[in-house]
Length: 85
Image (cartoon, rainbow, N blue to C red; front, side, top):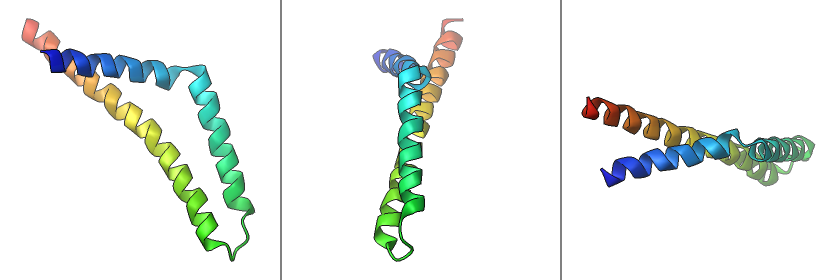
């Protein structure tokens, strides 16, 4: 039961972060900066372009991780409701 409530609490915290205006503003700004850096690299700077590309992908994976945590908590909450019935 404690693991269930922990997953639900983590999901709630992930939801707060994911919907926070400051998080989304920061995420958008950072993605814009990284995209501009990627676009402005010289064609011969393959390693630098790859680095910026990987940073953008990592940034996207951060949001995906928050979504996974929210989904896991939502699933746990649903299962707990079913067990209580």
